[in-house]
Length: 87
Image 1: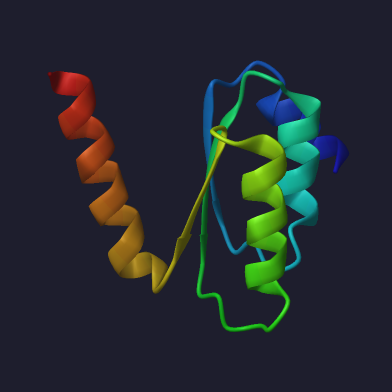
Image 2: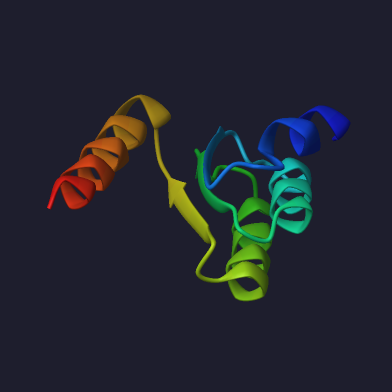
């Protein structure tokens, strides 16, 4: 947790692959009120959707959760974000 807090304290955007139970996501979002966090996860555990819903409600719009295979979802999201920032 200390490592995450140190490395995201001044960040504006961060990406996390593997949210699982959301401990890291919660730490980063609570530790930096300016952080926009993109969280990628397979979403295969029964509790992960509940954690995602809680974090989305608590930290909207700073928490973006994407379920699926990160080898496909990360490139797709990055391409979309870059396309929007180029406009």
